[in-house]
Amino acid sequence: MIFLMLQAIEDESDRNRLSAFYLQYYGLLKAKAEFVLKQFHIGGSSNLAEDMVQDAMAKMIQNIDTISKLSDPQLVAYGVKTVQSCATDYCRKMISQQKAIEDKGILEGADEDKVWEDYTGLFTEEDPMLFLGGVLAALPQKSRDVLLYKHYFDYSDKKIAELLGIQENSVRMALSRARKKVRKTWAAIKKEKGEG
Amino acid sequence: MIYNNEQQLLKVEDELFNLALLGLLEIEGRKLIEEKEQMVQRGEYASPPADQLRRIEKMIRQGERKKVFQSSIRKISPVISKVAVWFMVFIMGTGTVVFASADIREALYRLIVEQHERYSQIELQQGEENNAEYISNAASYVPSYVPDQMELDQIEKLRYSVNASYIGKDNEELYLTFRQIDPTGSAEIRVDTEDANRIESVAIGSSEGLLVEKDGSIQIVWNADGTVLTVISNLNEEEVLRFAQGIQTP
Image: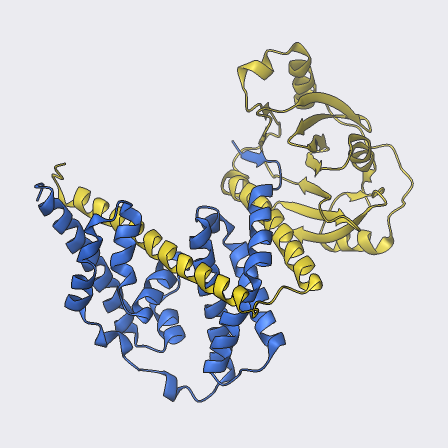
């Protein structure tokens, strides 16, 4: 038997939400794209940044299932990561001299213990999502980018490494460290509540 | 809570990690919203050009249509060639309530058993260009009437169907989607009629179709010599019916 669902065609709320997002955050997305372009010394082109925003919107439209589950701030972060990814992709394709931006190994410099101490204060945070998110938010920027690109964009380790200018094993290390931090946090909470 | 095996423990860890990732996204998003507000206050904030906005809105609509097409085709493709005999059944979302209507039962029965004759000929109004695009996509049927306010947006050839999307020339909120599905075996067609305002049988040429009005859209489904044709639109019923009735072999 074949089951063919012929459904009402459009989900208006998703469409309106994306249009509203574009209207409201176009300026931010464009500024973020310009920033990336500038970092790669391809700055100064407003049209190019606009193109990056459009590419990012096209990607977001393709991933509307993911987007529809996100809160407004999460959608903003997702949109910014998307435009940054598009702009970086573009720049990397444009620049032939990649040596300077590869193998930086920035993630290796993360100080786990310090990060952990900084966020013990968040034990009082009522919202568990924000509390646990805070643990990850204390990671270095590139580690955070690794997490988001891996889990929300489903990029391969290789692609993430290229985007962020790090080695592939640094990607795996960042993922492993992040998991470990969440696990440690959970263990600490359990211990505090006498469940451990 | 006691987690008594490794698998449960891993599952909990996965869920916690996913929650943490959502939290991270939320925190980053909040910071970005603040950053945006500061840009606005400094007068550095750019608004999108009007033409860009229109382009993005069009992309969003195209993305939605593509998603619906892909979703329905995914459901049909794995099993489409297994059974030899063609028939179709309409399953109602509200099941027993709808089937309790004698009129609907009769309409469904006729749809299942009726051997359809050829469509009556309708004079072609549509430009040959669009027909050529249909034909190049291996479509068996082409529309001979397209409402004035609509224009062809895209035609997409999938494994078992050809899907054509029309949008309003001046009002991009208007849409009309025409699909022709050529399954090679038995098919059960499921039409989403849950909470429909109206379900009734309609004459499409010499065939009988099912018309469903729901959420501001009209959907018509009928069988033409083994090809399932569907039209979904938010135009008024008269226009949708006229479009459906004008569909014929090229």
